[in-house]
Image (cartoon, rainbow, N blue to C red):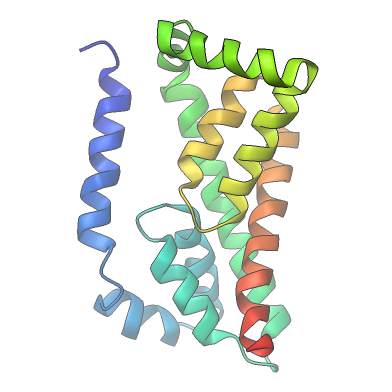
Length: 181
C-alpha cells in the first residue's frame, strides 16, 4: 500500500461516521447539552471533526439562547480551537511524509497543472479559499487542513489563527441562524 497512514485515517473517518453519525446518540442528546460551559466547549470541539460535526452543529443550534449567546460562542470557539490545534499538529507531524509523496503523484500533478492553467498566479489563493470554505462549514475540516497544510504558504501559528477564526465564524453562523428563522 502506497499511503498506509492516509488509508488508515480514511478508514477511521468512515468508521467514526458510522459510529457517531447518529445524531440521536445519548452523548449528543442527553450528556453534552447538560454540561453547561464545558458542554459548549465540547460542542465546539466536536464541530471540527467530520464524523461529529453534524451532531455538534445541531447541539450548538439548540443551545443557542439570547441569554447565553456570547458565552456559547466563546467557549465553543475555544473548543474548536483546541480541536484545530490537535488536528493540525497531527496532520503536520504524522502525515507529512505521505502528503509530500502524494503531492508528487501523477494524479495530483495533473490536478495541479489544471489549476495552474486556469488560475495561474492565483493557485495558492484558490487552495486557501477552498480549504477555508471546508474549514468554516460543518463539512470535513480534515480535508481543508490537508489542503492548506500542503500549500506550505503559512506558518503554523498563523494557520491555527486562520482556522480558529474560520470555525468561530461557522459557529457564529449556526448559533445566530436560530434567531433568523
